[in-house]
Length: 255
Image (tube, rainbow, N blue to C red; front, side, top):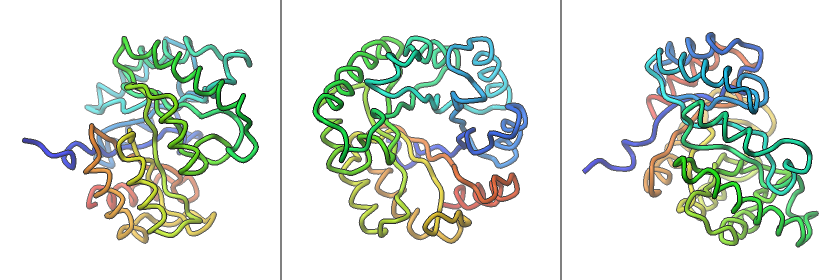
C-alpha cells in the first residue's frame, strides 16, 4: 500500500511571481522538476474569468503538471457582501480543474473578531463548502494573521464549528515561532490538513530553503502522517527571483 509520504507533491504558488506571465511560470516549474501549481486568483487567474482559467489549465496539463489548488482571495463571511460572489470563484476553480480552493477566514484577527464575525465565517464556510462539494472540491483556509486562523486555538475552533468534510486548512510555519511550536501547531491541525506553503524566513527576511531544511524535514514528516493527499508548494523566494526559486526547488526535491 502507498504511504501518505509518497503522496506529498511538490509545487509552486504563482503569487510568488506576480511579475511573470503564466507561461513563464509553467516553464519555470517544469524546469525545476516540480509537479504542481497553485494558481492565484488576484492576477494570473482572476476570479470569474473562465477563459483565462481554461488557458491556465491547458498550459499546466501540456507541461505535464497538475493544478494543486486555486488561490482565491475570497474571505468567508465578508466577500459576498463586498461584491465577490463565491460562485465566480468556484467557476474558475472548476475551469482550472483545481481540487482545492484557498479562502481566507474572515477579515479580522481572532483578538478583534466578535462572536457575530465568527458566526458569519462559520455559516458562509458551510455554505460555500456545500457549493464546492458536488464538484469534489475542498475549501481550505489560509493559515494566516489578520484572520480567524491567526492562532492555533482560534483556527481549531473554526474548523470544529464548521465541521464539514470539504473544509480543511492550509499550513505554513510562523517565522516568529520556534520549530517546536510550529511542529506542535501542525500536529494539532493535521487531521484537517490540505496543503503546505513552503518557505524559510529569519524574522521578516526571506532565506534559502537550504538553511531551513532540518526543520522542514520535521514538518514534512508530520504532514506525511496526516490523512489524505497533500502538496508542498514553494512561496516567498528571495527577491522574487527565479534563480532563488530553482535553488529552493532543488532543496524541496531532496527533502
